[in-house]
Image 1 (cartoon, rainbow, N blue to C red):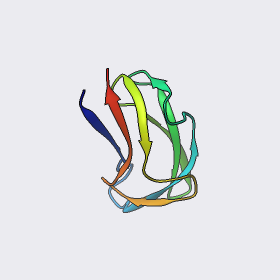
Image 2: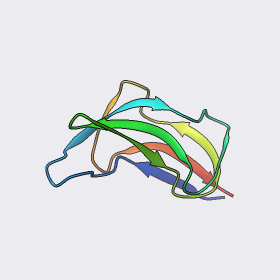
Image 3: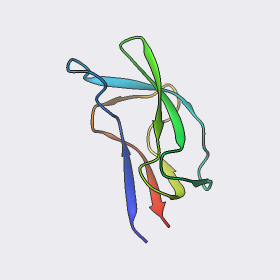
Length: 80
């Protein structure tokens, strides 16, 4: 089974980093493609990030309150 990265999205042209506000799924939980799995805050806007694939959330790389650059991996999903 392949591991797929969940990366910090770029929400605007000027966005350089974002903060993980809350994880909606825990390690070991099943996720569906398109399902919200975490909330991030960037430039005073909070948005939900969706799973890029269906599978199991294997690892959270950036905890709640953590900051990540655009494109940086936030979590790993083992594809079904």
